[in-house]
Length: 475
Image 1 (cartoon, rainbow, N blue to C red):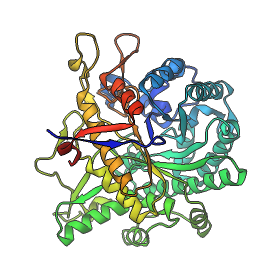
Image 2: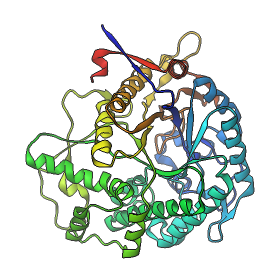
Image 3: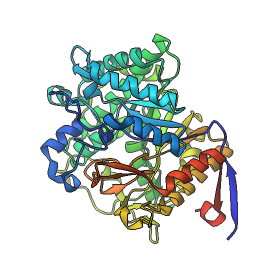
């Protein structure tokens, strides 16, 4: 089998991502500092795999020095995580900083920088304070936009000399889609108007945080981490193509267009009005969005999304849902990660890269998450106790190959980051599927053990080249 090698530029990011709530645990958390995931877990613990949620997670808040040493050992150039908004403050109305929690981040950023690992920080990774959800309805409220900007002001003022790569949100569409559109997560309320209001207020909050950052003259950049799903129609038939375009409009362009071009797609307004979806916006808000587009994007890419034209009529008494315009389509013979139920199709990275190049002014971006979660990884442990995760090495290789191929063809892509550095808690799935380069042993005081992929990743960073079987590279 022939092989081919592709170079990895010296300044190309080879990092990993996580979030505060999925790693830190509740050690030191004070009464009233619950985030939305914390309240979900407390109110609905039975839906979390084996009842395991964010209470302990990986205990990163107490073990970050150990983990940063492992990051350096594995060759990470960058590490992306979040600051937990719900824990950074003790009073959300008056924006009072929790000095104990803030000091932890002082120490973490110092440790990362001292070890040559660049921190990249999100201001919110699902960590909406529970108080703001219960008091104002969360991102349905313009008051929460105001309080988020004031929180960002405190964060920037404290850490701007230690961190220069900032992101307002990670996957800003996810929480409201799961809660208010599909009603799959606590507090389970199907309301498409609320869904769209959350979308708009997160776009608006991003614009106003960008404006604040620039007015203060801080060094660095502000972007957003999005998770647009590369969407393919079942066929080239007009009805299937339109189904894919509508899916793309409601789930991808609703954030991509305003954040990069400063404008919502006109068709989005038209269809929301057609279906009587009620959401509030002002000319001033649209002006702020137009004037304050992001500096860069992170793009989370795991699997393709395939759709076909709907085959059944929508029930007239059912509230509007974007699924009015599409149905899922499963490609026969597709490659699958059977642990996660997701199709494996590395071509999504290249296709997204070309779309950003051609449709989104070739804005600077990077792959912010890419990874493979596997159940029961202990079955791959060798005699030395190391998990031989060759499937993960293959997954990373194929997706990184497509990233580098796109970069060679003019995509303004600056890196590839894994989800995740260590195994960590996922919503509902908890530790069921393992994603990390580093194993977290729940049976042994959360001991850390490097998997085979960790040493491979270090070699990738040191050698600055990727070798792949040619037929794999073309998948």
